[in-house]
Amino acid sequence: RNPACARWYPIRDHILQTLFSGRCTPLARAAVRLAFHDAATFSLARQAAGQPNGGADGSMLTDPAEVQRADNNGLQGIVAALAPLPARYNVSAGDIVQVAGTLAVIVCPGGPRVRTFVGRAPPPTIPAPDGLLPSTHAAVPVLLARFADMGFSVRDTMALMGAHSTALQQFVAAADANKTLDSTPDIWDVHFYEQTLNGTADPARVASLPSDVAFAGHESTKRAWARYVRDQDDWDEDYARAHLKMSLLGQETRGMVECTEVLP
Ligand code: HEM
Ligand SMILES: *[C@@H]1O[C@H](CO)[C@@H](O)[C@H](O)[C@H]1NC(C)=O
Ligand SMILES: *[C@@H]1O[C@H](CO)[C@@H](O)[C@H](O)[C@H]1NC(C)=O
Ligand SMILES: *[C@@H]1O[C@H](CO)[C@@H](O)[C@H](O)[C@H]1NC(C)=O
Image (cartoon, rainbow, N blue to C red; front, side, top):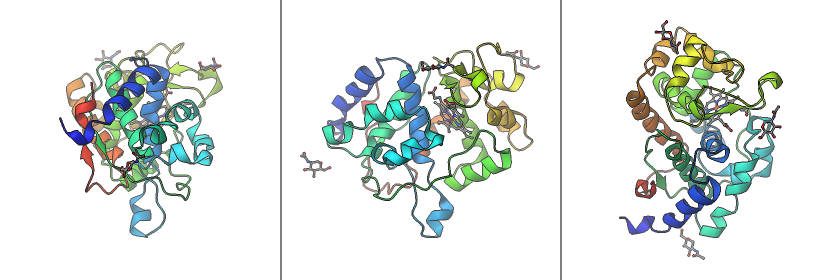
């Protein structure tokens, strides 16, 4: 055990037990999405141009305006639950968001252990750039360009999309409100890939996102998508690698400490 990780055990217990009730609850699913929305304001192009940038910096917990952006609808509950923790435990907001994210992945049955690092800098005082989160109505090449601008390959991107295995939609279309994105939203599994591809899940309960249907069928992504159909091990491995990368976007990783040991 690394002594530098000792302070993370009570934080882990707080997040897992008090917030998630030890299960793949709505707050846990929202925590996976929050880890993405906090990190995905990062842009390699902005970095190269020396412009203010986003990243896995916890700004979602400290900038009330960012949380209110329409892109982040549905994340207000998890943000309110996590926001007190940095001060309470004297750790950075970015660490809280990303540790909550990897804990949420593993609390959803079947979820892989994603290597978990701590030591992120405090969030910047300027707002995260707006307009960088992907829209589910955007075309596949636009979405792939945005993910490439975060540093993700097509394969990384298709692996990350499997987080929609434990997901529902509330705000995309009123008629589909609270429908899930596969038939098993409490389980971290690959049914999502097959059901989205085939369109076979019960439409009374499941509604695929336009972007997921597009990925499953588009010339440039369908092969990477199909790779995970009925291949949980392959997906878990790719997902864990891509999620780790996501959790570090925009951060100086030198000096960070690996605390994967706190995952249950
Ligand atoms: C092209 C990229 C993506 C698009 C367009 C997208 C879009 C969406 C949309 C529209 C919803 C439903 C929101 C609502 O109406 O409540 C959603 C939910 C969700 N997304 Fe994504 N997403 C993308 C990538 C990701 C990634 C990379 C992750 C994590 C690694 C992720 C994790 C989630 C989770 C866990 C939910 C469910 C939240 C809940 O049940 O409360 N998404 N996403
Ligand atoms: C909070 O943590 C920092 C190091 O991350 C340390 O320098 C500081 O003394 C801590 N503050 C308290 C009140 O423990
Ligand atoms: C969807 O679920 C949320 C949270 O449980 C609830 O507040 C909302 O009213 C539901 N919406 C519909 C259309 O059922
Ligand atoms: C999806 O389609 C493939 C190929 O047609 C088929 O083998 C598979 O059984 C289908 N899966 C489901 C869940 O319907």
